[in-house]
Length: 451
Image 1 (tube, rainbow, N blue to C red):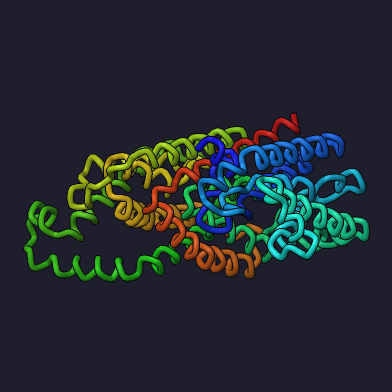
Image 2: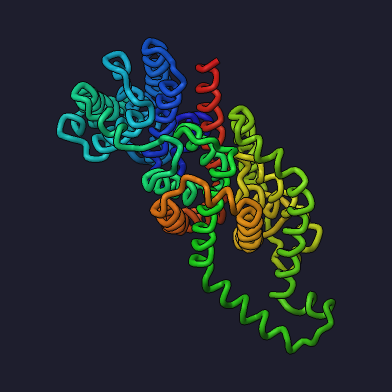
């Protein structure tokens, strides 16, 4: 199993959707972070060669173990070939001409995925090689093809031209709003911390992640993801409302209502959880927000989030229903939610993990997490808007960014939430944990390159 885990790039190959894409992503991120951190062309190329060698050796040596386990010539879980091929894509790029870090990283990532998926004739021939060699060779070929195209584009100034069209002067453009909306929509529900991703992206966009302006815009994006919750759980919310209305027939005795009405029971637990969040979170709010400006803290919190997700998948017998889920459990969930105010501590991840580790069935853990999240997100948004109304009015938001950002966050959030429900029920949260650890490692590389 260790060989298969390594060959899956520490679990990314086990992702339920597009494992090859996840496998090539870390290299593109590392390349972008290195260039953005001012690493020399020599250092970048040495690291890319190192990543290519690591991916190649793992694929050739451990590929047969995955082939035997899955009974397929090219098991989807093997992604160290994509890891190696993506590294080849960026070889020589920085040495030939200067590049914009993230435009070049995105272009190289997209080009490699195109060649890897479409597999032109020569790449298909390479795939015919035996054992792990065939798995590896086609991706190295795709990497070479992508590198050629990427270098040609860079030589003729296409990458610089694209970068110049993306305004990152400190004001939030429509493009910025759309990109941040995609990140928020994906990461609010996938247990990898939307705040951590937004903080990182805002840093590289030239924004002050801890500023009132960005905190306010982040809250607008959160409104979009609340809309996604209402859409995905619309049937459950309607049924909850009907049950709550029917509870009036039980009388006004609060103890009776709590014991006999399912909806009142859940409502009380959600209230208790959010009170616990407020009691712990509000006094520490400013410290948590200030931490957004320290990327070392962000990296450390991603390590913690990853550890919680991995640990949760070891909880095999989570069978408690919401009827048996009591006040103490709700307080613990609320405490978990409070610490998710820290950047890179996932709100959905911490609340789901706490609920499952306590024993709540995985299906109910997801639903309770987002039932608790609705008032928390809406309440935080309302308070922030009230306190910072003048700041928001003076912020550099375009009308388009304010409209596009939340809409994109809602649309992408619906897809991400459906994915989270599926992976949680199948006890695959650990793969998101591996992703968090990779992010922390990549961010650490970037920070060390700047030191």
